[in-house]
Image: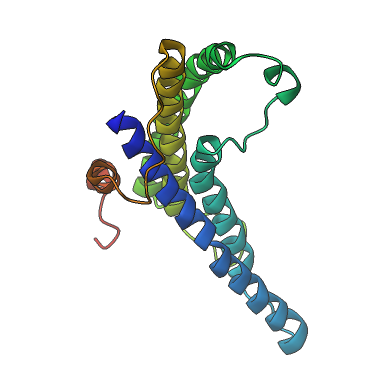
Length: 197
């Protein structure tokens, strides 16, 4: 149960980071509107920043949305079933979803690594920023979603066994959750070549 609490604490933390990103997103859009309509000179970067920040918000928030049950579901059926049957259906869904997530995490890691090594640029605007930072956020987001699916799978197994579910962790309450994110970063960034060579 400590693993579930650690994953959920990390997921909540990422959800908060994703939620806070609304401020730079709104700021970039306000600057763009002001520059375009008041000054008469649109920015080169606002379009790229806005879709990258919006993507980061969604990627960092999707695991937390699963944790609190805000993903789309068919409540018409699940409301008619008891807790154990619902847990069994969720467990089957998570078991089917996990290999797809594992493949996505694997491919996104390699895509971000390739983008870093080749210094890939977006090619969507005159600013033309590098894309590996946003691809790395996508990788982190899907990794967090995979971890949350594992936590949900463990919770479904606990319900089927009649065990109590762990208490809702306080934000960053678990030492393991504090260590998981930096450890994840230690595995990601050493394989990247320094951009300052």
